[in-house]
Image (cartoon, rainbow over all chains, first blue to last red; front, side):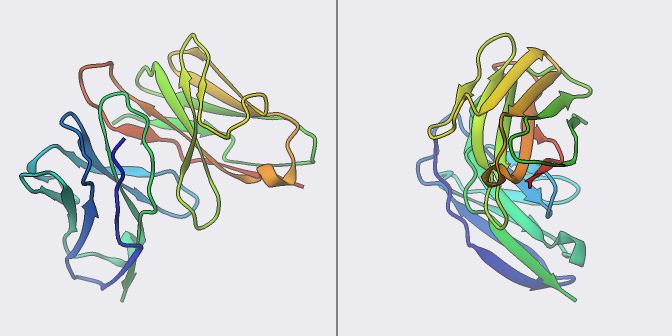
Length: 109
Length: 118
């Protein structure tokens, strides 16, 4: 299972765009990249998933370079409610997921 | 979307009691479910993989006799913490993946169970 590395914490202000980069140098050919958001005392919530290039949904974008050794989660115009821990995971199919430290995002007014 | 439900959401009990936590996939079938434990300010730690109709696969360091897992149907997995002690107090979270092999689907997580042992 590929190991992921993310910044431990990030600060931002409301209305700004936040980019969280995750490193996964040992990603395997069949691995997908998935990002989750977790609020205190809740289970992680699926945000976005991708394999290569760019993926966008209603809440975020995911940028994956050609070598797939990293990925960047982009949150447009964050609000206070985006304060949470964000996890980047890589894996395939029925693989178990191994969570890293995650990135604790704090959004200030 | 896929919904995973956990019950109870929190439980407080005396030391020595056994506690059962249920994890249900509400609108899909899951041959595989996962159980995690999370301590305050820490990341999720995978405890075991629950397989429908067969024995669970436990991660290294997790006592299988302490944490009993039963996956009797395609929509229900249970985790029983036997003879719980204060050090077992934690936040327990389950997840399930919709679909079968060959088509990658993300895991969906329950909202967790806060277990406090007095």
